Amino acid sequence: MSAVVAGGARGAYLAGMSAAVPFVIGTVPFGVVTGIATKAAGLTPLEAAAMTIIVFAGTAQIAALPLLVAGVPATIVILTAFIINLRFLIYGASVVPYFRHMPLRWKLLLGYFVTDTGFALFMRRVADDPAMPHRHWFFLGAGNMVAVIWVASAVLGIVAGAQVPKAWQLEFAATLGILALLVPFLRDRAEFVAAIVASTVALAATGLPMKLGLVCGALAGIAAGALAERALAQGRR
Image (cartoon, rainbow, N blue to C red; front, side, top):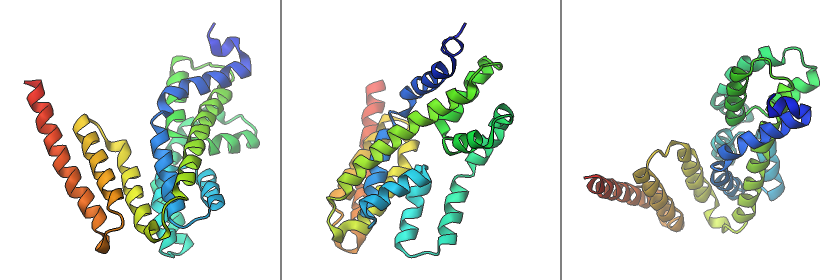
């Protein structure tokens, strides 16, 4: 008998949380950067925290920030976030057969906690055990773990973002937003080196005129990535 079955609803919930832990470590830097960018965009700490909790989608939040700062109509901001989060419609359609019998309050609760990590873990678990009992508790546990790590890391970033000088806020937020969107696409050490160097230089040069901070960061990142790739290629010989 599996641990999920033996532990009942509580066991399923804890199993979901435990299963998500190894996969949410990478959420911390993304959450911190998103929090800093949200605060640096001009929102108050309370507004930044509320946006993080309500939106609960890092890429959509990052994409919405420059639009909000620019005063774009709310309908455009909402449409942009909707398009970015279309994958969650696919996730929802995939899990409907497993939760069709649940009361509406459970469907709404689980709908809020749909995440990339939780969805992948849940689908893998039900594939191994199609008759898994208390499956909704497992799903909720995984979603709750992602939410706790995400909100905690974002709040840490919001606190750090409060230290950003007001004169830097818009460019600083834009720089961090771009970096946050790039994080999931880093695949090897050369790309990681390029990202670190580019972000460090771009953030350090935020105060330069004519928005040259991003340009300097990009050039430095390209150079660092090329050098790192060359060094790694020589090391493999």
